[in-house]
Image 1 (cartoon, helix red, strand yellow):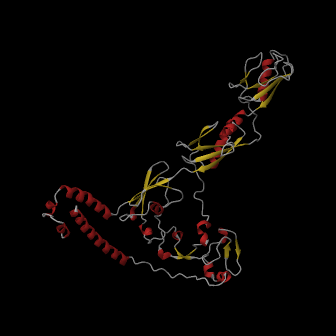
Image 2: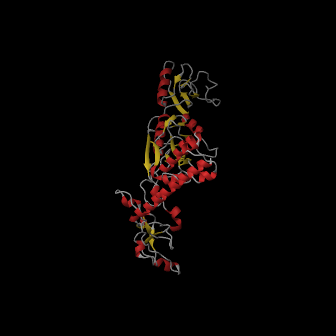
Image 3: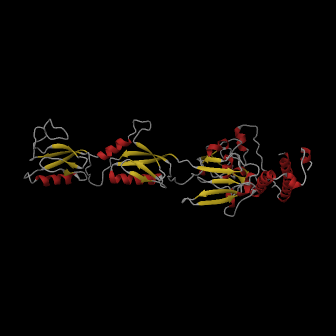
Length: 458
């Protein structure tokens, strides 16, 4: 074991010497840029108004238009227009020397030699909440494992088509010539107990869609309009009565709608209201009462509402829904290789390559930051990959690196080893652990190693 340690120490010493020579050569060939002298602003030890007057016209010339951020007004004794939410102290507004990555588009990437005064801390101590920024995406599209709440609303709007009777609707059948009027003892759903052969009665449309009346066969009623059912009854009873004069009066209607409302009624729970919680399945569908499976994968919330409303309009008119995204499906990235703590990390917001390396605890010694590989699955699950160089940015040599790309769900970020680490790993595996362990060192070196002094003097 001491012999192997000594051998590795010698190899590391040679590598360190070569690295030192390379660093000196690089420093000579790439001198550090000279930072331009920035104008320093020192507040006057006076009142706030005197401090405000110390801001020059040169400072305010670099302000963005206040109309782009918030309502503005003119402050007495202070040039330029300021947003109402701006701090009026020495910290802001305060343009500084820096680099704006958009100034190079579409020519390429800007370096530190392109520094100029840029707007930097418009809100001073409020920078962490002051900027609204642009929305992450113009419109969010649903995906697998998204959790939704579907809220139901009874519209009570006039329907454009005649109402069609449904199973469970309650009707009153009356005839001026076919039976006496309903007595006080008449019960809904049964004939007048005082007149056995009377036609006057209240009926409920049976599960088979029919109603039962005396002297005739069961009559299909579900799916018919009130006028169509009345004409059918008169046609059948004309064989028994010269002028049946039958009248059909709906008593309870929209039973499907009432059943749907009862199903989604959450007013007795913590959620409250008429709503149902659903999750987008791996097939991209959600399950809704009276509709079954509805495909919503890739739809916006507005498009999902339109789809559900149109489906309900065909089966249960009088209902409208509102679709709300209660929880996004989790999105992850995977960082591995030469980082401190690789693994799976949740994407909670816009994330770049350098941010992913930071989530993994930073890079380790021997990480090849010039050849970081990002693997990605396309919309059709095909595998894609790209290679980025973040070494210059992480060592402060590139202020606006084009390689600082945005990451997608399920991206894999691989930080490989440097070539010298790869060589060291090969030597460690094939020589130190394999050849040296299998064959005595005397065969390799032609001499024995009797003591540690012999090893260190080699």
